Length: 219
Image (tube, rainbow, N blue to C red; front, side, top):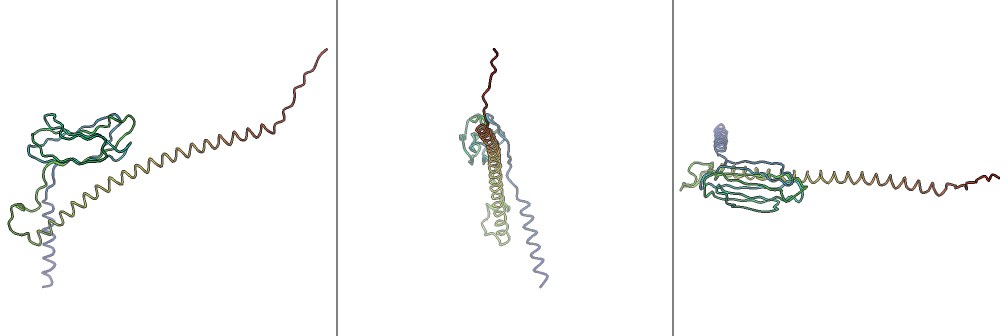
């Protein structure tokens, strides 16, 4: 009886691992890129008709942390457009098969360099268990554990992405503040030397005796 429990536990863990490895992820891309001032960057993705896709983006560094974004379908119709957004999400089901284009624009800014993160996902996530959507019976304890672990892992991944972006944004702000403080300190040091040197010259002029210049008169 003592060896039956470890064997059943090992079998459960093995089954959980196989099911989690079997679960497929949706097709998509996740990228962080640099967007110079007065520039526009576009990306393209081929999407089948009736397939759902989603776009999440966020400005990490630069200016007021805002950017213009728009999405166009293969016919050139704009299905999403937002201006000067710090972050946003967009979900759409493709009505036309073809290449969809989504662009980020910093053309309204003439000197602010931006860093933008986006996550573009295509397709619905398949069920972790086979025929899960068509089942009429309740899930077993093992299957329920698989689903719970899968949902928990997705939550962990989303949380890690969120905190990673917040950490990058806070680090950029701290570095920018450190640079400003350094320049301000250098300016104060130069101003202090200039004022000190001016005071020394001023005090020296007070104690300098001005002797009259005598001119000899020749007869």
